[in-house]
Picture (cartoon, rainbow, N blue to C red):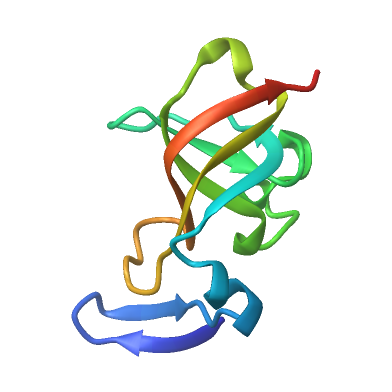
Length: 113
């Protein structure tokens, strides 16, 4: 992450710096597993975390690289469950108010627990 002062917002923001391997799969269909987090969003999106809720990014126990925004509406019965999802990876380089990884056209492939 690169941190800089955003004059429009009036505070420091972080900008992601993606490695070459991640840049190569931007826009590709991927399959990934993680835990659905309990979030309250206006548009119903879900959050996938590499770690379970007790250790996730939002609790301060991990970095922003461990969470991903899913465009599938949150399903209450899957919160805190480990799932496998697939979709098109989108790297977020400039929207400070969204996560750095997004998965579009998301489909839940399997519920693991």
